[in-house]
Length: 295
Image (cartoon, rainbow, N blue to C red; front, side):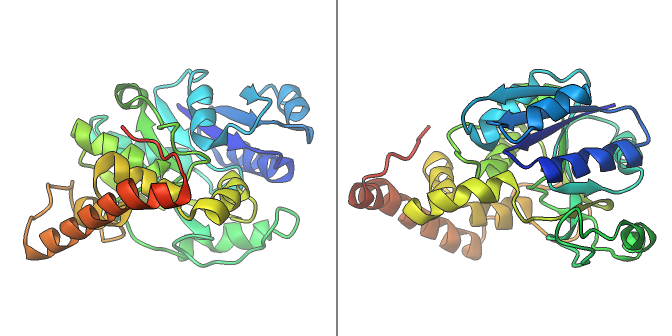
């Protein structure tokens, strides 16, 4: 049914628990594909033992390159991108399958709702060893958000045809910050207008040592939020502007999106983007001697 793409970076305890939850709580026989960054903590041996598909780099490839490599091993028509510190709720794939049937075509981008570290605050433990699974499974349905616009984060799902048309994740976003909204922008330019977050598709997010957090601290310490700067130089607008005026992120989902209303407020914020663009392009890069990727 689904090919689940999971990048991991020496995070075996969480990865094992994530895979355990997928196997336990799935309705269908889905394919799990991991991309292993380095993997000298026993990850390679574990995945071989469990007969789980994986790609591997002996270096830290970051999220985007890793996901693109893993995607080449997929055998199903839908990619589900997930973090290695998720716990998947029961029948998550049945919920997704029903949503896809309801839409009736493949021009969409869907995502789930994160609990604990995410939209819904519901603490059942900060590590797999601490996780109160019994409490979680008996109570998670009573903790809700709403179906929302502008899904831009994992767990997210897209059809393989759409993935191929936009070329997967853009690898200039290393280690990964900014890659999700960039992917959404490419989908938007392709004509996709359904960006829906699904309340009933829930995952518990430990959020402690996910790959992005491990490797983004170095980048942020040196460069600030480099992903946001790459996005601005590439698309001419900020991530914040894109989410607010195009994706209408975190507002209640009512229907597929339409082009933004270009009123006074729109243009005020648009010109702020242009000021930031010229600052980053002509001043910031020279002052900090940073080679930011461009188109």
